Picture (cartoon, rainbow, N blue to C red):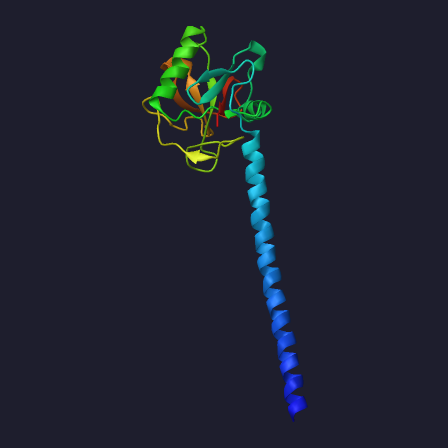
Length: 188
């Protein structure tokens, strides 16, 4: 009888050990997933910059590239891609001060007669700023729409531009039009 009890205790100890190892393995998998996520976040932050690259203009905590060459007109998605090749994103105008700076810069450079893509879009059904390196997609809190905008006039106006005819106030525009763009890097 004593041997039977000892055998059962050993079996229970083995089962408890296996159960513990199984639970540890599950926790290990969760830990590995968490570590992978942390690594991806760190990779993104390493790509972030603390100073402006050549051809970018610094204002406060951002760097801007005003893409105004005549042959640089692009669709919204092509402009977004172009910005990403410079570790940037299409500009997200998040404050009145930022809007005033950008409009002032375009006026002083003699570029206020052009149209410019921003990162604003409603491709998901709500107006938001598109994400990019070191910048997460986020809803628009500050807006500077021209009166009556956005109006979805052509039925396919899902991207936002700074509209030359309206003092560079915001307008919803067909994403396939080819216009100029502004790229932004958020400094760390």
